[in-house]
Amino acid sequence: MSSVPSDLRYAKSHEWLKPTGDGTATVGITDYAQNSLGDITYVQLPKAGATLAAGQVYGVVESVKAASDLYMPVAGTVLEVNAALDSAPETVNGAPYAGGWMLKVKLADPASVATLLDAAAYEKLID
Amino acid sequence: MSQLKRTPLRDFHAAHGARLVDFAGWEMPVQYRSILEEHKAVRRAAGLFDVSHMGEVDVKGPDALRYLNHLVTNDVSKLFPGRVLYSPMCYPNGGVVDDLLVYMRAPEDYFLCINAGNIDKDVAWLLEQARGFNVTVTDRSADYALIAIQGPTAAAIVQSLTGAKLDRIGYYHFAEGTVAGVHCIISRTGYTGEDGFELYHAAGDAVALTEAVVKAGAAHGLELTGLGARDSLRLEAGYPLYGHEITADISPLTAGLGWTVKLDKDGGFIGRDALVAEKKNGAPNKVVFFKTGDRRIVRADTPVLGADGAVVGKVLSGTLSPILNEAIGSALVTTAAAGSPLAVDIRGTLLQLHLVKPPFVQLKKS
Image (tube, chains in turn green, purple):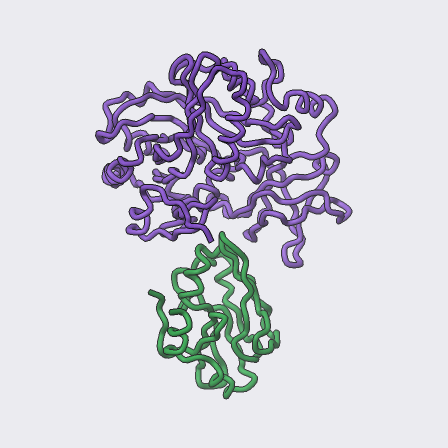
């Protein structure tokens, strides 16, 4: 059973987003996503400063099985990426909602978070 | 979609948390916990693989030796009872039908182990070629289950369950005996580059034998290991996989398996003329093994680029070596390009291929 924390919002493409309340947010991939991918071997992330539209590819996650694109849940500008994933991409498997975070972003429109799924709706999606 | 075939251990795998996938028409465990961790467990201690999907064929009769030597490229006449031989089996054009193990049980009594995905094709080929030979060829695949215990502690685990003296069974030798009360062909072979055993046994005994091995293995670091780890282990060891490094279009010589091709053995064999010509004239392509120094996996079918950026080949197998922590793989490239710098383009990044003579890691196997 995949973990779906109730305080996060979710994209149908299996990214999570955690608004911090000051117009920024943290982005990663869900427990369901990491489990489907299997052993994660490489995470390719954008550079800080990149401005990305909702649904735009922001990076690639590779597992032994396949390489998969990562999608921005909402529009925003990258403030910081998780550089620790360079040498320890398996953190995404072990702690997808904590040490496995990928981006900190400044939201183009904080209200856009409301377009994302809540935990109950995401649980239904992956059921 | 047709129903996937199941080994006698399918429910055992499901009960132990395996992720079951379609492998060559079989519902098989690709992993239990983590492919990378299972891989490391085999290099460090031991892993238990269900490879019951592999095919088994009995070849018996007065012409068994002459027939097998006509079929395979290696020299079956070198076998004696208790000895195992690895060999490709070729088409007349030198392409590979399959690669297999030949077990000699007694004069006129041999046993073959063939790839799961090739069972129907191989058995048809074996029967077709049997015309004119006094042999009986019998597909025994459904009768046998097969588990592999691989890794530095494999011998201690199996020895704790059998009265057979395993130190008297050398690498690529076998004996018949009882393991945990189950009659087995105890074969000191494997596909991981580690010491280990493959135990052929009656399908009905598979669950009891596997549970006994798991219990005995607990004190020796044994883990359940899936086909994902089996693939990365064999690639790290530099072993070919049918459909990748050897195919109907890639001969054993092109694949670097010249040591298994005995062109001068008595009586010749199917594909000999083509392989003699390939050896004399030189092959247009060759299989190379590479590492990149980067973690991005270079996957099968990725184009390989030569020094001027032109495509000179393609990747055949690719994975992340959990031991080296970098991408490793094999590729088919033009012989002309093989001596020059090679690269691949991974999502816009050009990665140089560093050619390696496998194994990629130091193996402790005897």
